[in-house]
Length: 595
Ligand code: NAD
Image (cartoon, rainbow, N blue to C red; front, top):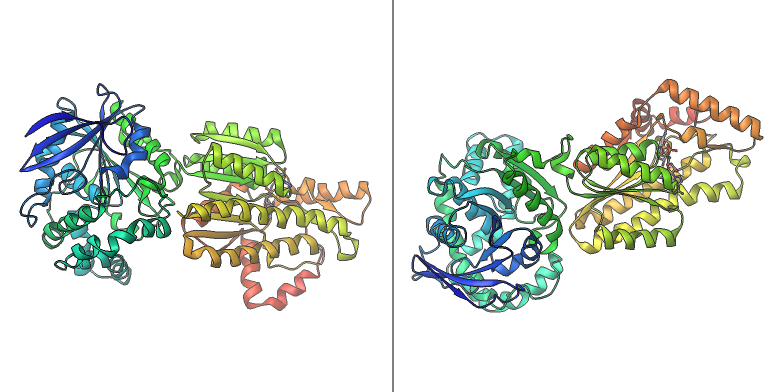
């Protein structure tokens, strides 16, 4: 092995470049940041070159010594001759060690791999000869072939309907792997029409922003890289190593919308990586290009925790949904009180970043402040009336500019209105529909559109009510607004399904919040209004169903992508009755309800 200095790398501003010679090839290595800092080593996938990491590398370089290299046969690194047998995991491990020795001879490196870069990094972190050379490993969109081999074996030898389903699911996602095993054709395709169309395909299907990526070396990267598959996949999946245990802490980042890899591939990973931290992200496959900010934050956090001697899990929030929502951006409306505030807190406990929106400025600010104390790495309070379209537009621009695109949107703000149809004025109708329905429409249109345009998925939660399916002679306006929210949620769910955006309608029954004290009762004077508000509040207090339970149901609904979620026994009962005994529900509708 030999190393030599050179000119700056293309695409990576300010990069220092050197060549590392190993096993008959020369590897093009780029370095950024202060070489005195610990090293973060980024390994690219297929069909890529090191430039896939540009966005992440430049951000990481503010704090770390960042190193990237073109895998043999890719980018500006030379290819082995002959190609066959030149890309085995053993040879790729030699390359890694040569680069690590050249750039960080005295200190272990923080390894980060995407796609095939992750597949090979799993090999690096699970073989004996690299022990002590790897401080931590962040893996995204690329499993260990050994773990994958055991995963398949377990499902073939001990099949259950669920396991067979998982096997078939992953089998369908791996269609391109079979194609890459055919001789010559992939090379011809990549050097011909596929190579030309690939940048457009990435932009259209994966929403990878256009720019200086992929680089001009794509056709030869892809043709050479086919040997990564041919040299390793069949051999390893057929005879996976039994001792492929990670000897460094591992951070697994799973994009929830990955077209090539099923989330179930990692079900048993704790067995192989005892010091494992899991994160998930609404994203497609090419996360280094589409979510560089989030990846940078997680790599920073994880490597910092490991450097500080902390256990890897210290980088994770404590809440039950920390793996699912940690680091994600969650916006909740009506967050100054009741269900909205409890929901903001539950997401904060999971380590999400919170935007608390309410027309009550002080309450929103207070929710944000408490959310930070509970565990949100960042939280903002914003005073906005959800029924004001322009104010919502402005809010969306500000959030996108300052915090990013929202991953989970909770349209929850709502007001109560009780009174018979003929006691409800046009003004009353307008007020309740403006907040309860138009507020949700604005949220879905404006923030949902940003989410759809980003193209990486996400989730929208709309707080409807059991009143959406339970008619009542005393709540015509409120129930109509909530029935509309329920139907809007169902329609939008159908429209956004193909884009990886889930939509859930939450339908609580009687929940002990402030809503009873602010509900307007029509057709009565002020004194009677106050008496009714008090009576209803007392009743809801006696029922005493806490908003925290609704918040838990909301997190569960997002994690499981549920369509309609009745919360409280009375809401579940009414939901069942609306389906199976609607007549009985109609009879109840004639009675005087609490709200
Ligand atoms: P709440 O009164 O405690 O909280 C509602 C919050 O929304 C308040 O902070 C309020 O300031 C805010 N808000 C009202 N209008 C707004 C506007 N135009 N713009 C911005 N913020 C606004 O009530 P809650 O019970 O937590 O209600 C939350 C949601 O749950 C509502 O949509 C409500 O209809 C629904 N819901 C409540 C119950 C219940 O029993 N409490 C049952 C079913 C559904």
